Image 1 (cartoon, rainbow, N blue to C red):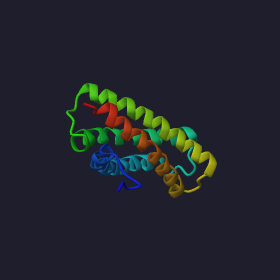
Image 2 (tube, one colour; image 1 turned 30 degrees about the horizontal axis):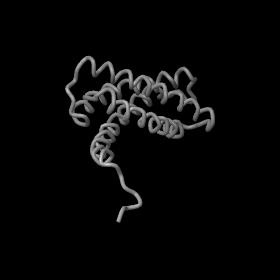
Image 3 (cartoon, rainbow, N blue to C red; image 1 turned 120 degrees about the vertical axis):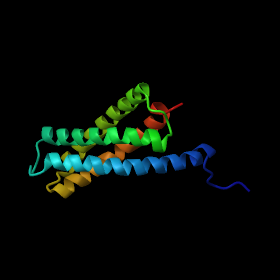
Image 4 (cartoon, one colour; image 1 turned 30 degrees about the vertical axis):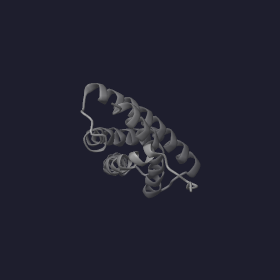
Length: 143
């Protein structure tokens, strides 16, 4: 009897890698939110430029930590200048997706508190995480 829903073997093999990626991502997310909130501290309703600067600074620090951890822990890959360059390219794409989503949601939802703004940022990070995982696995750390 054939099951109605059968996962391909490759997807099952990728599950532990994705969970390690999510763990590293959780660490990077803490770093990202820390710097994001430090830059926004005491700003009330930040301008678009200030919001993008805070998001980009947080994302940059988190991406550096993520590269170090993902290369060792998630993908077990040797760190090299070429891998770092590919990783940076994927991260820049992720940053563009993140910032575009952040601005879109800010415009649609008009968050008025720091908690609401952080919730919008969390959604933006979640959207960019899909791009990042696929790109890091298939391009940055692809053997």
